[in-house]
Length: 213
Image 1 (spheres, rainbow, N blue to C red):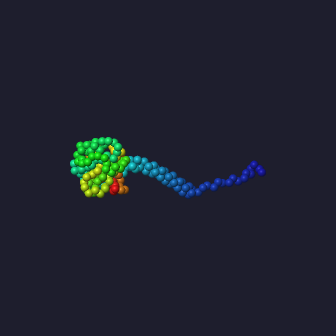
Image 2 (image 1 turned 90 degrees about the vertical axis):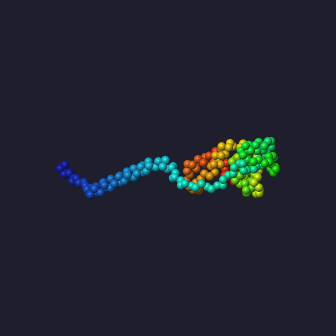
Image 3 (image 1 turned 135 degrees about the vertical axis):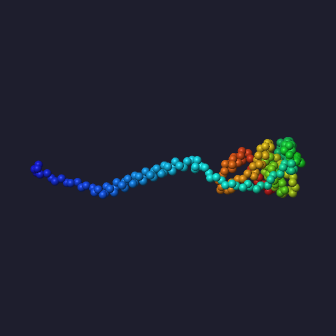
C-alpha cells in the first residue's frame, strides 16, 4: 500500500443537541429534589425539641370529689386495747389520744385475745365510719374492720407493728388533702396531682379500705 493511499477516516457521530437539552434539566431537577428533601427532614428534626415532646397538654379543671367531712376528735369515744406482750402500750397510747381530744372509755388487754401482727385494728360500726377513717390518720396502716356494731364506740386494738402516733400538724395536713381533686382515669396528670402522688409516697395514709369481719 502506498503511503499516499490512506484509509478513509470514520467521522464521529455527534449526539443530537435535543437529547442533551432534555437530560441536563432532568438531572438538575433530581438533584434539587433530593436536596430539598434532606433540608426538610433536618429542619423538622430541629423543630421537635425535647421540651415540646415532653410537655403535656394542659389538664381541664376537675371538680373536687365529694367526701364526707370527718368529725372532731372530741366527738369520738374509743376503747384502747393491747394485743401485744408489751406492757403499758394501751395505757400510754390512750393517754396520748386523750391529749389529742379523743374521749377514752376502756383501757386494757384486747378482749378478743387474738394476735395482731399489723399496726392496729380499728373496729367500728355503720354509725362511726367517718370516725374510724379519722383514726386511721392517727394509726397509719391500721386495718379498718366494720363489725356491724350498733353503737358509736370504737375499739382500737394495738398490734405488734404499732408505731408512735404522728405529730398533730402532719395529721392535720393529711386530713386537709382528702378533698383535693384528682384527674379522672385516662386524663393528663397535672403538676399538682404529681406533687400529691409524691407526698402519698412519703408517708400519707392510704385511702380507708373497710374490711367486713
